[in-house]
Image (cartoon, rainbow, N blue to C red; front, side, top):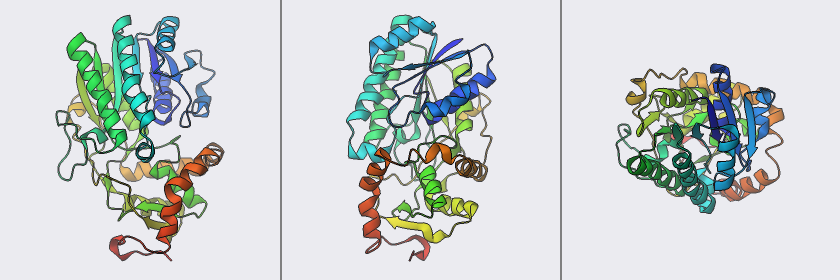
Length: 353
């Protein structure tokens, strides 16, 4: 592997992966392939833009000709696929783009991998394909039981990847990560949403009782896990990547408010989203056997994340306008208005004025 096509590389996890790989492997060339939708942002990669080992192609993974052209031009031997529609709330509002990118787009990339005889195709997936896990932890051989349109579209992509390995012998790998936090995460996701709202003394709209548990991990820990799976994983293998601990959303919210010196009264419980999974947890022993370990506890990851958003308002303030404001009003406006009148039962008796 020397010439890697990083699809979705201008997004949150993809851009962090590109930065890490350029620093780690002096002889690698990375080509970012991204259509730059609302979550793709070349500002995420501005610090590597002058590196001669980095190139950018603006295109959609659903465009088979554009994919083929990039593979030929840059002599690609490996694809790492981060490209995805990836926000559960948006998938509930409109699932069309999720099915197209997360299923058909994966098919296009798999066809290219087959047709060009590439060395490896790594597909970045999510723990949400397993569905909610009320006890224990998901293992890679567990059944896929997605409960949102987003999770279902990712599960569809996973199954295509597996089928192409079984049917055509493609050298594929799937990674399934827990919830990521860290630099350059689009502020519709809960952690950057809460941080940026809290900085401006705006309410933190917390779904339901806030007791949903998530395996939050620092994005660079996830990127290290992807690289280890890419370098050492078995073709056809699936590898979970996530921390051992799960954190309730209300605990996360209170801790980030404490880090910012803001009152817990900014938390406003709003009515829950449909089908909201109560808990995710991952058994990562398979990847740990290859040498991976998370480098951050949740508290360390959260502190680094909060500090980054405090120090980088230049990045997120322009984002929280225009299309973002329209989405925010559609998703939370009525919820916040109702929260001022009648609310769900609040966890631990907490109520906001």
